[in-house]
Image (cartoon, rainbow, N blue to C red; front, side, top):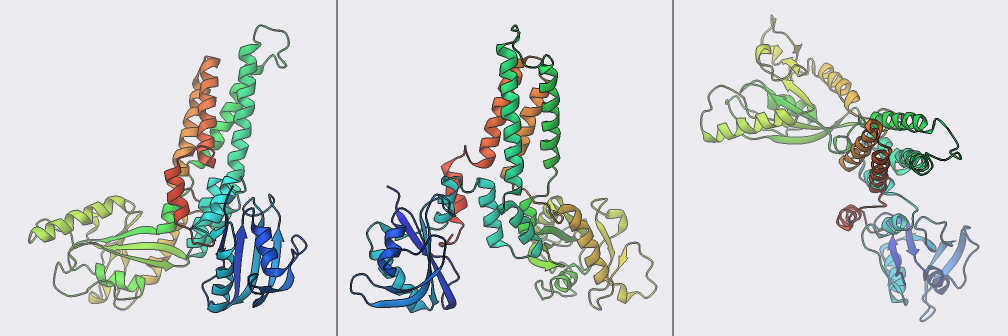
Length: 427
């Protein structure tokens, strides 16, 4: 029998209200033990909670009863909305822990039960995880779309299409010499539907990366020594994150600083100055790390000569323009010291970010999801290119397996353990 679990599902006490959730076959018994009787299903009732061992009052709280399977976890579920003081929470949890068949929940265990009982698929779980960790409004919007099942519904449409195509293909194979084939153009229909499915799945492959949305757009500041990279970094992030001095080569290693600009998460990286000859072995290592950072950058802010720009799409900055009144260098004229040009740079960063991140109403995909869609697309394309219907049938079967992996119907326990371990106890 499945254990019945309980946990505080609201914020840590002290708080105005504490929500304690109980899920499992003994949830009704537990609620009845504390409140005397079960309330009407899905209707809140005020009740005096008492310790069933000695009748001592614990708190006066709102109680709710949700019989399964139509609940968040797919099991019987009870909620106690009590006062959020530490002593109240501890007393109620102590009584629940003493009841037979009940135990404290592990991190993510409520959500894992929802997944196991078919209330959520793996994509909605990942969306919920991102929603709990969201720090910007853009992260929140994208995660909410995923958590509410927008991507899952699209996958379900693919699954329905693949199942239908598989059935048509089997019919064409089994009854190709019979008169009871429902459609004489069945093979042309199969290939047309496969082509449409391939186009739809292929369009998703260009969806933005959830890792980029979560961790921030990687912006690397690069250029020669003493170009003003560290001063500009400090100006952009609004604090003294990097050491600034007139000594060339002050920055010896990469310095990564997360910051939000205009509601968008960025990860700014200050790098060692780049020049032809390193002064010592440590500076050479710093320069090598700077070049690696440039290779991984989403956006490069280049504070060097235009002729040495590392990438065509880099933002060319004519830095320290306050020192040269008649400056004619190409690029955005900027002074991190006075603030001139900084607002224009931020606008340029946000314009670049808008292309890299999901827009309103769009969602971002994790690497696992992108790889899963790529596998699905590859099998659908192989089916479209195959001349033999036997090969078409096999590729469609592999496409179904790819869909099952996307939704979590097929997956590894290790991956699931890592995912759910990142949730808080009450989720």
